[in-house]
Each structure stands twice: as C-alpha cells, then as structure tokens.
Image (tube, rainbow, N blue to C red):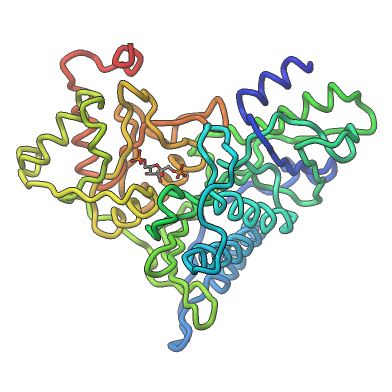
Length: 418
Ligand code: FBP
C-alpha cells in the first residue's frame, strides 16, 4: 500500500499538496451531472452605467442551469482572488513593496519560486478552499510528498484533508503564469481549469486502517489526472494595462474587464471568436533549431510568405502564455511552445496551462494541438506533466497539423528526441 502511495505522490505531486475530499453522504454520484450544453445568459436590460458584472453573469448562469449553482460559487472565489492578485502584482512595483524577487525555494519543476508565486498560490488556494465546493486542488506551486493531517492519521504533514458536504469540483491552476517576467512589470496571468470529481472518494476514516486510507487518498488525488475533454470550465486572468478575466463554461467565451472604480469585472466581449486565419506567430524562436522538423518548416514558410495563405507572417512573443494567448484570441495568430530535441514535451504543463487554454481556444473557434494530437484529449499521468502546445487560428493550426501528417518520415516525438 505505502509503496503505491509513495509512487503516486512522488511522481504526481512532489511537494506540498492540498486535497479537499467529498464526504461520504453527498458524493458526486448523487448529484445531477452537468448539462450537455450550458444555456448562456440572455443579458438583456443592461445597466448603462455599470454594464454586466461577473456576479450578475454567474447568477444568470445559475438561474438558467441550476445544476451549475455550485460552479458559480467557485467563480465567486476566482473573482475575488484575481482582484486581489491584480492588486498584489500592481503594488509589487512600488518601492515600499517587498514582494518582488525570489522566495528562496524551488517548486516541483525545480524552478526558483518567486515571492509572488507563493503569495498568489496561497491567495487562490484559500479563496477556493472557503467555497466549500471543492474536491481536490492541484497547483503549479504545490509539490511536497504527502503526509496526512486531520482525521485519518493525526500526523502533521503536508496534506490537508477537509471533508465538505457538497464538494463537486477539482480545480487545477497556475497562480501566476509568466512569473519570470513579473519583476519587470511584464504582463502575467492566472490560469484555471475546473473538472468535475469523476470518482466518488468515499474515505471511511473511522473503519479503515491508515494504509488503506492513504491508498484511497492517493486515488482521490488521481482525480486531478483528467483529460481536457472533462473540463466543465476554464478561465484565465491577465494582469496587464487592464485586468482581463476570460472564461468558458463550454458554451462560448466571455471576456470581462476589471473596472477598478467599482471593483467589479464587467462583461466587455461576449461570445469571443478568434479570426480563422492570421498573419502572426508567437513562439520562442531561440529554440527553432531544436524544434520538430514539421514545426520548423511551417514557421519558415510563414516568415517567407510561402505558407498556405501566401501571407508573410509577423512575430509577437511576450513570454507569458496568458498574454500571448489573450492577444492571439483578439487578433488571431498561432501561439505555442512546441516539443523539441531538448524538451520533447515542450515547457507548458498540460493540467493547468495547456488544457484550460485549449478549452478556451476551441470554444472561441480556434484549435489546440501538440502537432499530432488534440491537446484536450490527452490524459495526464502525473500532475506536472508537460505537453507540446500549438494553438490559435483554425486555418493556420490546420496547416501545422497537416505538415506533421505529411512530414517525410512518420513523425514520432520519441524518435526525434533519440
Ligand atoms: P510559468 O511562469 O508559470 O512557469 O510559465 C511558463 C512560461 O513562463 C509561460 O508563461 C511562457 O509561455 C513560457 O514559460 C515562456 O518560456 P520561455 O521563456 O522559454 O520562452
């Protein structure tokens, strides 16, 4: 037993992890599953002064889709946390602030944690925790081997288990994406993916031994390992000239802008659609020589104007995924972090970067691929798994996919890495 737990946790979540497990009485199976298609709010009778706030938007979603009532509570926490993070990021540039620079610790990926990585992670974690609507949460900044606190073992350690009456959801997030840029005031963001709990986690602490409890906890944690096609919602918040919150519930993409005078996210763009073709690509071209051959070929054609559209593409790259994806949604284009011979799976994490952004991109009419596979269809094996990502305007991403398909030799990532 303990061997299974240590294997799952050492691989899956190397450092601190927090899991909120559903109680025995109201596990998911007793709840109506989410509607096949979410009815979007009608939003008539809009107040000219204030517009449609995120709160009103979510209330209307809950009225039209009662089974999503608890999801709207989670968005209430996301609303508050993103406003607080926006404030933290802005204030961090003030001379009096001490929130810039490194924390002096590393996360699961061996990356030096920024102070703001830790601050924003705690902020979001607490905001979500107190909704009482959570099953499990996983974060880029959580990475300790699991030890149980609370009822099951009484040992102090790094896993908190909190029973909750109406837990429904698994939330995976990157609290401050692009944090390597934050000290320079470059746009950063928060990325969030929300899944339903796809398994009843009925841990009968009182009647089972410690090992079995640990094994069941491990299985509950594995709840985070779901493919993007299981996402019920995804969102990103961009901290830039303004603060933008963009979300999908599986029926279109909605963009809100923070009106700081009233402290509310206001609906700015309902039903966002990405242009089907474009002339912008967005990659870290310093890696171009190591890229998969098909990827290199397409970008070289775009540079020369010899691609399918015959248009010469321009290049834009912020180095913060949220910023680059936001611009791509607005103007069209192709953003990505392809696999290469150094990192066959690229750099971006599937669970809390690739999949949520792919869901938003697809809901806006774009596509998201690894080159050979739809990003949304990949089931993660470990929490911090990386995935090659190429997403954006449909016609341009199709050009990439077809280039992989017709590559001289059948393209295999393993072969390329060998
Ligand atoms: P984190 O900052 O959350 O680790 O995200 C990774 C990231 O910064 C993405 O936002 C961005 O797209 C990419 O890495 C940039 O990588 P590189 O500096 O190698 O181009």
